[in-house]
Image (tube, rainbow over all chains, first blue to last red):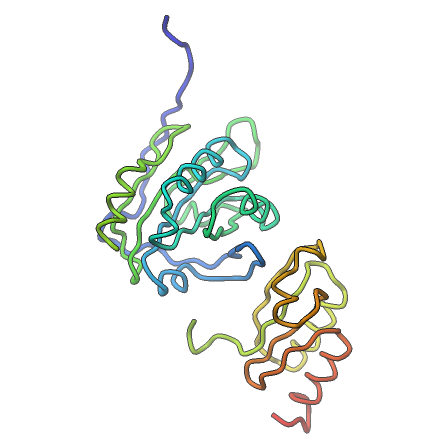
Length: 170
Length: 89
């Protein structure tokens, strides 16, 4: 029997690709104890970084994505930072449950999504644009070493590809 | 961390009037500072307890003088004495 469900195709995205420099930005960055304004460049200065855009905290893809990243232990090898429209308070709740050792940027207006070409205006939630699932592996100079952006919704990162890209960097 | 990082870190709670009092004095003295926002739940403020010995906010850490301090009245007095007209710094 064929299942009759819809996976939505998303328009082509104009995102940073391998070899390009990822745009810098400053947003509140939440860890398990506090949040403070931080720039992406301050994070990447500390070492290779997996920059992960994801849907709002609480959406099932967000839960699945972080569970998988936790299972694979990416944060044991490199810095992992997430970005979503959720508030610092919601990020704190997420960090209590999952995303071990990760830090989360709060980007409520999704301006960073626009900067990276990964916006996802939500049907049925008027006025809310969030981030489509996307993963960028950045080196210390914010050069993109690996990029994946969802071209349909829902979609999940290519974890094996990310893992291979991480293994090449560390 | 870059050279332009502020010397003063303020641990604060969103919408806490005692914290805003400290912010006003920092602004009046034209001091740059970084804000670290902590949890409303007192029991969850381990970072503040670790730096100051108490879980109350506001608390400041001043790298320039090595001072860590809580209680807004104390902080205001410290900032004014250290950085105000005729202050030590």
